[in-house]
Amino acid sequence: MNFEQFFLILRARAWVVLFTIGASVGVATGVSYFMPKEYTASGDLIIDTRSADPVAGNTLPPSLLPGYVATQVDVIRSKRVTDQVVAALLASNPSITKEFTAATGGGGNIKDWLGSALIKNLVVTPSHESNVISLSFTGRDPQYAASVVNLFSESYIQANIEIMVEPAKQISNWFNQQIKQLRAELESAQQKLSKFERENGIVAGKDRFDLENARLAELSRQLVTAETDRSQQQSRLRTGGTADGVEELPEVQNSPLIQRLKIDVVALESKLADLSTKVGQNHPQYQRAVDELKTLRTRLDAERADVLNSLRTGTAAAQRQEASLRGATDQQRTRIIGLTRKRDEAAVLVREVDNAQRAYDFALQKASQSSLQSQVSQANIAILNSAVAPITPSRPRVVLNIVSAVFLGTLVGVGIALMVEIRDRRVRSLHDLKNEYDTPVYGSLPKTRYGTFASASSAD
Image (cartoon, rainbow, N blue to C red; front, side, top):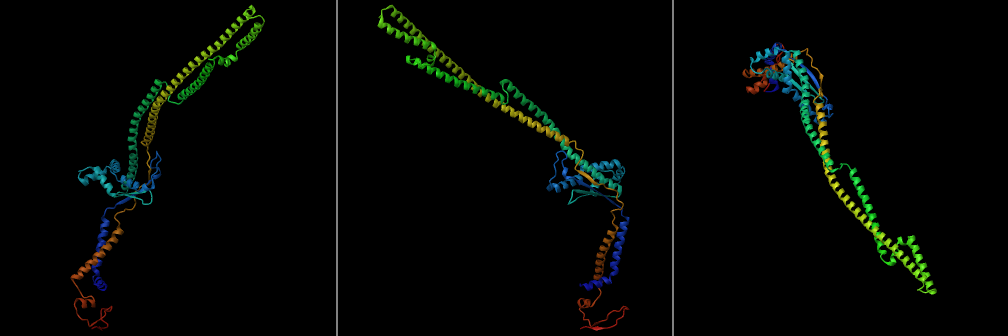
C-alpha cells in the first residue's frame, strides 16, 4: 500500500476516523468530569552541609553529598518518620478511622494502612544541583495534602535530631561508665606512686637525684685531696727514715728550735776542739763541755724524733681520712646506683600515672562532647518552603486527557478504517485496477465538482 492508497482510504473512511475521535474525546471528557478531583501540595527542605555536626563543627565533604542526600530521602520515606506522621494525623483527623473501616471492614492495622497510603502518594525528589529536597503529596482534600507534607517535613527534622541524639546518648552513657573505671585506675596509679616514694624516701623528680650526684662529686674531690695528702705524708716519712734525709724534711729545716740546737752543737764542738788544745780532755772544763754537747745532741735527736713521730701520726691520720672518704664515696656511689634503680621504677609508675591521666582526660572530653551532642535540639535541616493548600486540582488533567484522547482516537480510528477497508475492499485508483485485478486500463474520466466527467484519456 502506497501513500496515495492510504490517503484515499482515509478520505473514503473519514467518517470512521472522525467518529472514533469524537467518541474518544467524549469518553475522556466524561471520565475527566466524573473523576474525583485530587490536589497536590508541595514543600521544600534544605540541608546545611556546613554544620553537619553542630558540636564538633565537622563539615560534610562535597564528594559525600550525593550519598548523604540520597540517605536523607530514604529517611523521609522511612517507617520511623511515617509512624510519626500517622500518629499526628490520627490524633487530628478522627474521620480517618471511618475511612479505614469502610475500606477494610475493620480488618488489619490502621497505622499500617494509613502509612502505606501516605507513602504511595508521597513523592520525594532531591535536587541534582543543590541541597534542596522537594516533597509533594496528592490527595482529595487540599488542606489535608498540605498538612501531610508539612507533617512529613516536621517529623523528618525531628527524626533527624533523634537519629543524631540517640547514639550520642548511648555513647555518653558508655563514656560515663568508663570514666568511673578510669578514675579508679588513675587513683590506684597515683597511690602506688605515692607509696613507692614514701617507702623509698625518694621523689619522682630530678632534684633528689641531682643532690646525691653533687654529694658524690664532693666526696670524690675530698678523696682525691686525701690521697694526695697521704702520699705526701708517706713520701716525707720515707725521706726522714735516714739520718741525712731527716735534715731535708721541711719540718726540720723550718723548726727554730732544731736550728738553734744545731748552732749550739756546732759552737760547742768548736769550743771542745779549742779546749782540747789548751787544757786537755781530762780537764774538768773540757768534761763539762762534753756533757753539754752530749745533752745538746740528745735534745736535737729528740726533736728530730718528735718530727718523725709527728710525720708518722700525720701519715696515719691521712690514711684513716683517705679510707674514711673512700668508704663514704663507695657508699654514696652504691646509694646513687640504688636511687637510679628506684628512680627507674618510679619512672615506670609515673608513666602509668600519666597514661591513666591521659586516658581519663580523653574519656572526660569525649563524655562532655557526647553529652552536648545528646542535648542538641536543632538539626542541619530546615524547611525552605512550607506546603500550602493548592487552589487548582492536579488531577484530573482535562486538557491533557482530551489531547491524549484525540491522539489515541486518531490511531484507533485509522486502524478501524484500515480494517473496514480490508473487509470491504474497493477500487480507489488506477493503481488498484492494475495491481489488484490485473486489468488493463484504457482510459479514465476526471471527476468534476459537479460529479460529471469532463474529458477522457486512454492508456494501453
